[in-house]
Length: 292
Image 1 (cartoon, rainbow, N blue to C red):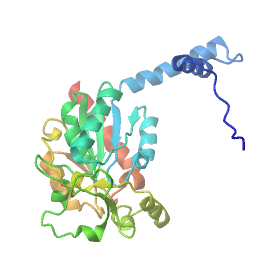
Image 2 (image 1 turned 90 degrees about the vertical axis):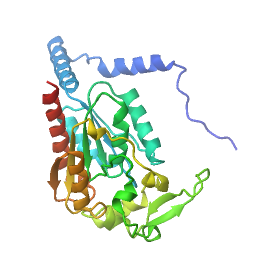
Image 3 (image 1 turned 180 degrees about the horizontal axis):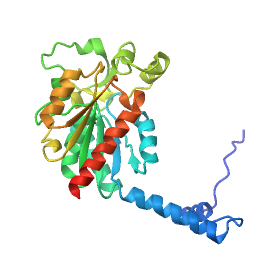
């Protein structure tokens, strides 16, 4: 039997291919007059200058999630002229996740950055921002805000009254450290715990696609917190079924964060993206005035 192969592209160097695509996408059409082209160029330059005058917003997702949860917030901020990046969080360990984010900030951003973390990612940005002088503000969205020595599970369950077996399915991946496991929220737990306020069918679909986090990531002690040197802002969801609102408020007040409340569950970036967008813009403008 003969196997067909897709037609191969000509052997262009990568640089030549990128250049060819750039010329194709940017060259004016024959129907475009010189005046029209000048006007288009001017508008593009204006948009570029507007984006350059604003910080880059980096949106960091938490456990059992991925960056797609930020899509509506991203669209809103882009409409306002912000450059937005939403990197993946490996969810392999607090130190590993913070180191990955720090490397991402180093290699993929330049200039001021507003760093936004949801849920577990609050601990990640708290640690990652220590090493990046370009981070101008931290924004916590229904997030953990650990002090040095705190762990996520320690903050959530200080009396150790929760039974992990009631909440999680455990998977031991090859190469895992002894005693460590990947944690999946049970399918019957996920919709009400994580996705309250989201239509049931969508919540079930989200549960099916959840990404696991290691147990060690939730039990690791946090390092010296960046919020001791950086201004921080906190969006507090009053109907969160994962992080109780009183715990959110206690952590935010301890960090000296400026608190905004919203009637939302654990995922306001999905159920009320405008509220998230507004607090990011507030952080951006406040820190810009301070710097000025």
